[in-house]
Image (cartoon, rainbow, N blue to C red; front, side, top):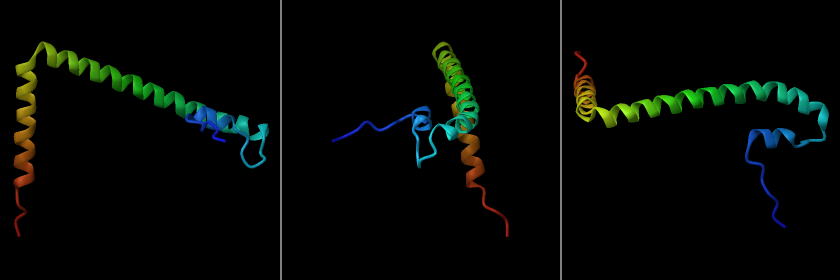
Length: 85
């Protein structure tokens, strides 16, 4: 029969793999919990930055268009430069 596959790190951590049992669960939790907390923190910051950018673009569409145009022209200029021999 089909069984459910653990999708999150926390679910995988709770499994007893290779006969290690619960003795390894605490050590694994000590490593994975701070990593998961840091990832959540970075994700929250990224989500806030995206929301702020979306709000800025909705309130100032022409300024956003000008910023994108300047970045595009600058990138095109830098990429089209040929190194001198």
